[in-house]
Length: 108
Figure: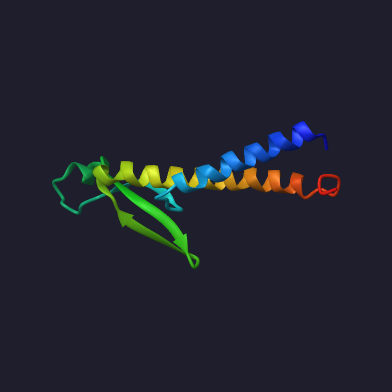
């Protein structure tokens, strides 16, 4: 591999590694909106206009866990899950870079 290309790869790797620490706090999961009924016979939800509620959902040990967020905490949870996705994307890119750096012709 030519030296300039190798240096670009190493520079990109260092830049990605610097970003790792900025991706916290994070959570694996999804922010979901579910429709529910309250059970009151005279409520509009009894006629099909269900109440919208926001939850955080994640699976652990084969079971789905839900916690109620409400609208005010949904934005925070969305940021945390976006950080997790960004971290996963960063790890994928670092993996490809490290695979390139481990090629036999690079280690010579």
